[in-house]
Length: 432
Figure 1 (cartoon, rainbow, N blue to C red):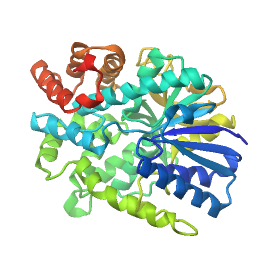
Figure 2 (tube, helix red, strand yellow; figure 1 turned 120 degrees about the horizontal axis):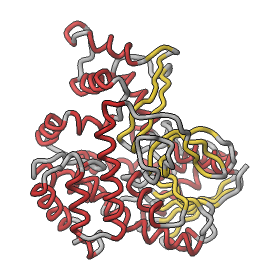
Figure 3 (cartoon, one colour; figure 1 turned 135 degrees about the vertical axis):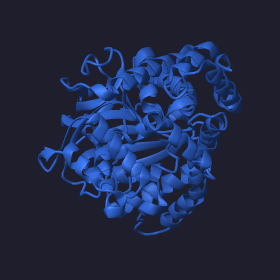
Figure 4 (cartoon, rainbow, N blue to C red; figure 1 turned 90 degrees about the horizontal axis):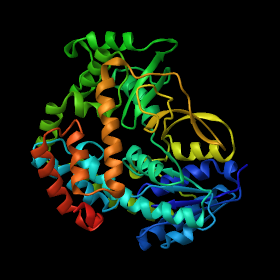
C-alpha cells in the first residue's frame, strides 16, 4: 500500500476531524503515511492534531499526524496536497449570501455573485499554494476540495503545471437524494452524472435495473393530499427531473426556479452561513470533548463532513496512490470527453483514477434540455477563472454579467462593487 505524505491545507477547519477520521478508517491503504495538517488558526489546528493522534492511537493505525502554521513546511516533500480552505471564513460566506439578496439576486456560496467572490478569494490563495508546490513538491498532485471546485481547478489547470483533481460528493449524492425525496430507497439507484460541478445531470439513470425517470414521474403524479411528495422543494426537484428527463444537481433549483428561490431566501430570517456559524461552537466543543476520550467517537450531528458519509477525497487518493484504476467522479480538464464542452474546460465526469491521474471516460453527452444553460455556465467558469488569476475589475464584471443568475450589467456592477468592498482584505488590489 502507498506510503505517502499528504499536506492538508485547511487542516484546522471544522471539517478536518471528519476527513482525518476517514483516513484512519482506511489506514491500511495508507500504512506508514504522514498527514501534515496546516492552518492559520493555531488553537484549532492544535485541537485537530491532538484529536487525530488520539483517534490513530485508539485504532492502532500506522499513520502519523503533524501540524504547522507554515505552508512550506507542510508541503516540503509531500506526494499529495488536499486543499480545503475558506478565505474569510463563514463570515465572508455571509456577505456572499446577504449582499446579492439585498440587491435582488440569489445569494449563494457557489452560484451567482456569491460564487464568483468565493472563487476570487479562493484562487488568490491557490496562486500562492501552487507556486509553493512547484518549488517544494513539483511532482505532487493537488486534490482540491475548496469551493467553487470547478473554477479553482480551471484556474490552476490553465495557469500552472501542477496536476489538479477537484472533488465533490455531489455526483454520488444527488441521485440518492432524489430517490429519498421521492420516498424511495436510495440503494437501488445507479446513475452516471456529468457536466460541471454543481451543474451535473444524469446521462443515464436506473432504479433496480429499470429506467428511473418514469418511476419519478409516477411518484410526482400522486397529489400531496393523497400521499404524494409533500415538501414544495422536493416536488420542484422531481418536476425538473421529469421535465428534462434527467436527474439534476440540486443547485439547478437556483436557475430553473430563480424567482421562487430568491423570494424564499429573502424571506428567511437567517442565511445558511448564519445557521452554520450558530452550530460551529458545538462542533468545536464536541471535538474538544472527544480529544479527552480514550476512544474518540465523532458524532455526525456534531461534526462537519466525512464521519459516516462518503469522503470522496480519501477514496480518490486511495485509488490514485495505490493505482487501483477505480471509477470516481472528479473535476478535471475534459479533453473532449464530453462533446458539449471545449476541450480545455474542466468538467465533472466519471474518471478512471490511478497513478496516471484521473482519466475522463468519454462517450456521454448532456441531455438536450439543460445543455444551453450548462454551456453558459462553462463560459462563465472560464471567464471567472481568468479574472481571478490575472484579471481586473473589468474582467471580473464581464464574468459576473455572463452568469445566468445575473445577466444585467447594472446589477452586475452594483453586486461587484459592494462585494469587492466587503471582501477587500481577501482580494488582490487589481480586483478592487
